[in-house]
Length: 253
Image (cartoon, rainbow, N blue to C red; front, top):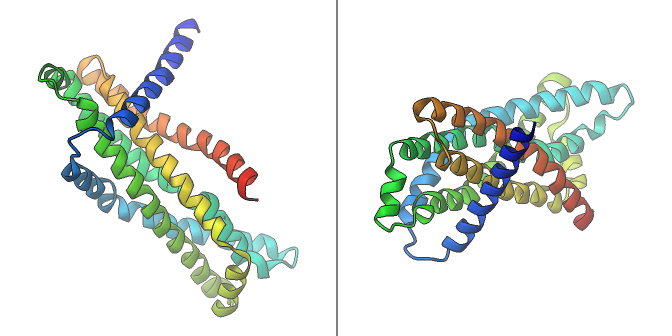
């Protein structure tokens, strides 16, 4: 138990120290803009299919389930706003962070971990290269761009998927559905979800980078680190979502 507690404290402390180093390194030259653009492509373009597929089916499932159950109370008219609020505030940013984040962070851990076990990180230190600036900062900056953009797209696709399934399965009038939804949903519902995705992007990449840079034990240790990253990202997103939700409710609602 003591060993587990020490490891947990050391892990959180390590992520915190890496976060502070990233914050300090952001303003330092060089800027590595090409690396940021490359990471945007890797994280965003290559994850677009996963994010949109999950969004459209999640939107349809949540909406049709809501319609069936709300019809029992004579409230099927409000399915659109309920589904849209759930997608914009929670399902869109959280599912995007978990699905895309797990994929992105595990890839980061595998790449940086392989560099660590083959002593490439040590070589960069020997050459006087700021490896945090070179390897971590571009990934974090790219995530701060990619995750909000993916969340916006998944929000739109999820809401539209719900509207289409209501038309096909329940015979809903799409014009009335859209009007009811836009009447009850306000900009802050959309913006708070996007704001969450910014935090999720930072959390995902910092976890992936830290686990990669702290990999030990050769290829076996690399496998353990990659698996642990998926678990850490999932738990990090879920736990931080609770506190972000409490914060935004206190500030804006």
